[in-house]
Amino acid sequence: AAVDKGTYPFFMLKEIDEQAIVARNLIEHYFVNGLPQIDEKILSAIKQADRLYIVAAGTSYHAALIGRRFFEKWAGISTEAHIASEFAYDHPLISKKPFFVFISQSGETADSIQVLDFIKKEHYPSLTLANVMNSTLTREADFALPILAGPEIAVASTKAYMAQILTQVILAAALAGGHDQLQAELSRLAIDLQTVIDGQDKIKELADTYLVHADRAFYIGRAADADVTLEAALKLKEISYTLVEGFAAGELKHGTISLIEQNTPVIALISQSKTAGLTRSNLEETMARGAKAMTIVTKNLASSDDDIILPALNGEMEMFGPILEAVPIQLLAYYTSLGRKLDVDHPRNLAKSVTVQ
Ligand code: G6P
Image (cartoon, rainbow, N blue to C red; front, side):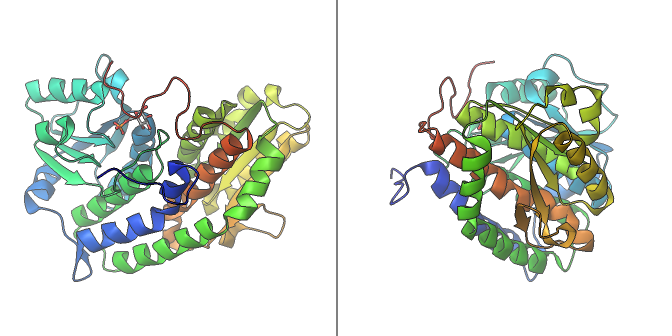
């Protein structure tokens, strides 16, 4: 049956709003008696590997960047994330016992299929995490797991990105042999996601004052937040047509700071305690040059001057920073596109699934 957008003006907003439900569905599907349950065959195939190669395109690649940290920190497996269109023709030295993970919303991205065809010829094992099951990437990989986001209609991916990250978190925990607090932590995170979604009036106001009239913008962050800047920039540019760059905050002084003029929006993502102070001082450097600075910060690292304050993530929970940050970066993009009266769900020149290389 066709999916209906109900009372929503655009599918994208509906799909952003569904993200807490997506998180709960994943918990319900993958946890049994408080522990993550993944097919033993998949776990043992991955455990035999000396390195994971996650291959994906677009937003799915950005989800891979986030997931990578969980495979390394929790499961102790060296993990690389790769852009499919690059890996297909210019791959790095492959380890002795590689395992390939494909991440895809559609399961039909030509660039990713190209890599799967190549690694199958080499007899390397593979797993696909996809939203559309029974797609080429799920059928042709050795294993497949669903990300359970439900149909995603808007061209700009939102809830599938969330589901891709969460599925990797659950898989990494299962590889680590459980993590008995995880179900409770993810349930808490689903509540926090809903809190951020419910606070979107403030985010709309910020989009209206900072972004709707800007011709360029920058996202900065460090560590896991640096990875999120890439998705934040992609979301904003693809649907609002603003020229946006996202990068590691420490790189500002090596070039991009020369683009800061009076009122250039610079948005800092701050959820990692080790680097919070450094990112803040980078942001201040841009303000000294006239930038209009905005902050998206978790409560434990925030002060009352911050703009978007996300629920607190203390200690180890900090690793979930990118998951909470996903919502405000999507909403800022959505409300900027809306404020410009653009067709949010159908940005020009873009397709939901790209089946050409
Ligand atoms: C297209 C879509 C993106 C998506 C990318 C990868 O560019 O517009 O939203 O991230 O393809 O697609 P996949 O289906 O493999 O996740």
